[in-house]
Length: 150
Image 1 (tube, helix red, strand yellow):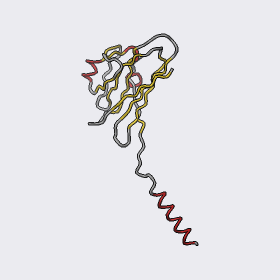
Image 2 (tube, helix red, strand yellow; image 1 turned 45 degrees about the vertical axis):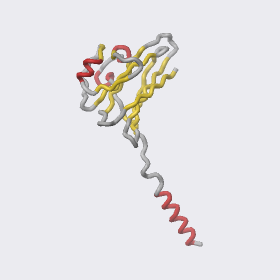
Image 3 (cartoon, rainbow, N blue to C red; image 1 turned 120 degrees about the horizontal axis):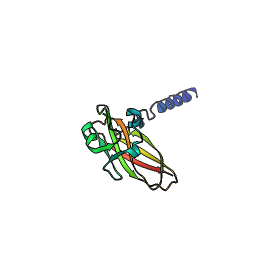
Image 4 (cartoon, one colour; image 1 turned 90 degrees about the vertical axis):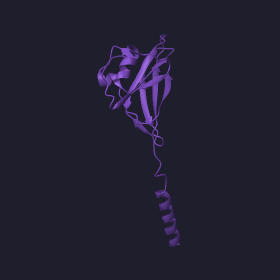
């Protein structure tokens, strides 16, 4: 009888040690903004780029200088950052914009979720959103997910 319990104990131990140790989990990556990194103010209203409900990734200062206009024109450290910038037309006023960057553990690709927190005012803004993200590696893909919360 003791042998059966001993064998059962060994089998349970082996089963537990073989459980999904190789499984990976997605990682949340910190993003920065032009406001907190370079002192820009109100970029959702003061920064312009010729886009309509889409985004682009800017990887160097020359492209930033050519594509982006507005009151803040910092010299961005493109050795460590890429700038994800886009426009979103909304049907009501905006309180804030939040960003969450997640890297898929298997593919290495990233998804930036942009969440617009709206209010009930009748203003219908076309806002500029942006995030400074760690430099993308060659072949690494970035997608955008837009959430609008009323």
